Picture 1 (cartoon, rainbow, N blue to C red):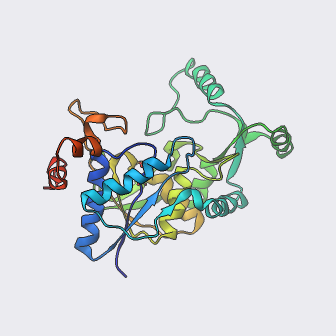
Picture 2 (cartoon, rainbow, N blue to C red; picture 1 turned 135 degrees about the horizontal axis):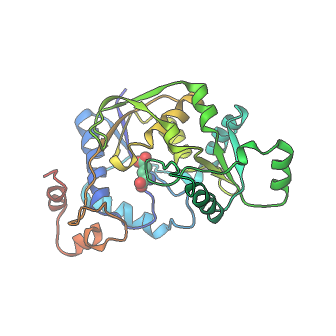
Length: 289
Ligand code: GLU
């Protein structure tokens, strides 16, 4: 079977040089290996994703010379798939509702930090400190009935007990030079959010489900998602999904060494194109000349 690659942007802004690098690496790998390249539109966050950004993505990727298979999978059209996966995890007793708002969580963390450092996840955000996990079933039902918003969180300790130690095969490199069989440490993320009252999924859940449903065999993406792979491995095992291999790549940075963002104009593909750059020039800029 030919290897399957995917490029999975979120249409919440215009593509920049970092996206170009990732998309070109996927495209080149697919071509070199006789593989397939899929495109997935990660538009779960409906407050930030916009159709005009999606249209611009297709235009920018085609301009770069990238070809992908159609139909494109747009996550917002497949909520039932994610709900199904969430239901499986719930049936295993691994999901609980947490009712604290972001502001309440910040207050709880500040209170914990008064007594000493509170653990942070690999992205630097404090772990969820709430105690919604210990609410009784009756209390949960009562709070849900009030109509309050809530997040559905993974009981990380119980999930890790269930799977035991996990690892993934890294063909690229992690931020600290990790490669080969990399031990996964999902517990470093605490009780991650899997879904919210109004949205039956999250980035972690939909990426795990989609990579499997689309038959992705090699995930090529930026090192900023290297540590998140631990959560994806955990979800794959809990849901009985196959494990792709991973190839994390270096990030393209701006002159000040910062990770690019969708708002940084000087590295936007549209701006560079308007300034007269060619697709070959973009390849050179990202070191794929
Ligand atoms: N949608 C994610 C992003 O734009 C990428 C997800 C992935 O490659 O796993 O950063």
